[in-house]
Image (tube, rainbow, N blue to C red):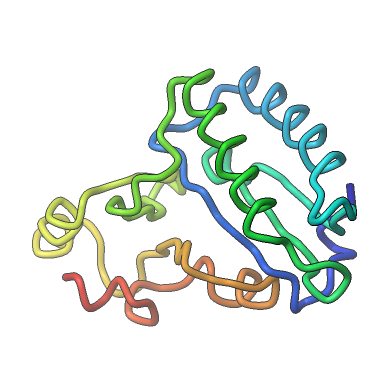
Length: 160
């Protein structure tokens, strides 16, 4: 498995947000499962130059250097199936795209529905400087520059 720092900036990324913080034990176990998956992940029988990790004990990151070998539809399907298995094994939801993740004043990650998020904004509990997570980033470069951004600079601002 490639180190994330060594992945090129153009590498394709996918971020899967868990509906809850993973325990330390779950994080260690899932990291091992991710390593095993990445080492066997192939596209048309060719190994992918890929990376996987867990960030903030809540986000699973997959990254692939598409210029080395592009993932096929079948290889992407295999990653989704792998993640669905993780969901069942650990009783988590990784595919709920309707929840917004943000950093609270205590730097803890919180998740809210769109309506809860708007209510928190209206009540002043979050504001334009609140850090939100843009899980729609598509490359390593975007992840480094636009994943954790102030609400005012994110697409989330249109939702409040």
